Length: 436
Ligand SMILES: Cc1cc2nc3c(=O)[nH]c(=O)nc-3n(C[C@H](O)[C@H](O)[C@H](O)COP(=O)(O)OP(=O)(O)OC[C@H]3O[C@@H](n4cnc5c(N)ncnc54)[C@H](O)[C@@H]3O)c2cc1C
Picture 1 (spheres, rainbow, N blue to C red):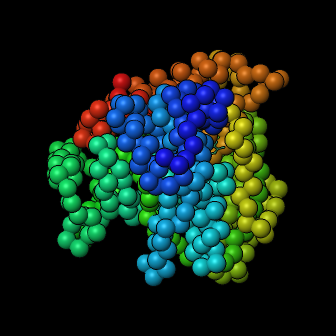
Picture 2: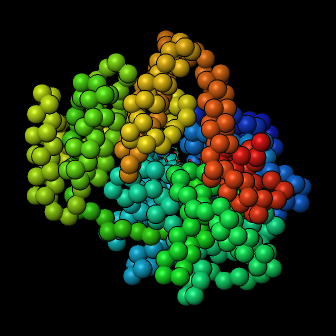
Picture 3: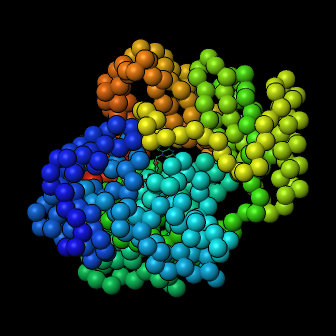
């Protein structure tokens, strides 16, 4: 193996936490230089029966990218664009490429992977697929799953397999004994348990279009618990020529939430809550994009009319198309979650009560997705310390675990985990698959 291996605590330190502060000490960290290195690292872990945690930038907020096993850093070297098909508007990439690097490379072709992630310079395509990331412009462009066409996977036993569209005319073939067993098992799981969509976790996204089933979809949101991706093929979109944002300050969160459907009817690409506290003002950035500048500006005027009718200050317009969300890796997040819009205020109110009990206050951030809100509570600092943070993590983690156990899709997840990874060595212990 030509890449680096970090066995000592100091070198492993950067890999011991995610962005929300979940912790785990890797047994060893591998930084593969090539896909061959990547395969060798996985071979060694399998032989030694050491759990594997594939890692992109480690910006996850639920502990998905930390663990006590072999942590594989894909971001440092596995960031090549493998093939770009301009006619099909697809690109095949190594998993460690960052969203920003990919979109910069695609800009010369007026194409992009249509997602606006906070921390785009850092987050990797592998990590976005692993989490089924819901970017700021999900309202228009959807979640990551919608772009995923295929993946080259390494399965638990080292089998390499293309997962993509399967069926008459699909590119995925059952080329070996392992796949010959696994695929019928997956069909059986889908048949017995039915279909249900969800944003993250092992899902049973099982679409059947024109006789083709896309098996790559099964792996989106699986948090590295089912198989390891060595490349991903995603669908691209034409890059819009204009993008304009407007900053609006609502009296409070309740007023902001009550206006979401009116603002959505103006067809924005993104509605981003940049900052709000329970009892303070709510700052929001609303963005329009398209190829017709006049149309974008008209939408801004419509937004201004709406805002003025509520007695608020006129929006502040920015021509550089930036969302204006002040985020950093140091933001202290507890758990991110996708909340159905009708439940949003209730969830915020109840969580605010919990935070108050722990003597801390929450600052609310997030963005509107389709029919839901991607909510990211962050702690307000009290002086330079945070109270009750560890206990809060544990409380929320346990709550999610209990909640997930009651969810019917957890049964699908558990069966999929058993089919893909019977020895439970791929990122064990994640809520995505409920292994405890
Ligand atoms: C301030 C802030 C804002 C955020 N905002 C959002 C947001 O708006 N929407 C959102 O969805 N998320 C958000 N996140 C969470 C996170 O940034 C994203 O989910 C991001 O896509 C994770 O990318 P990553 O490269 O850091 O992945 P990692 O955290 O490194 O990994 C994510 C998961 O993917 C798996 N994985 C990575 N590579 C592979 C591979 N090769 N094979 C198999 N599995 C793999 C990992 O095991 C892990 O389970 C935010 C985080 C922060 C700190």
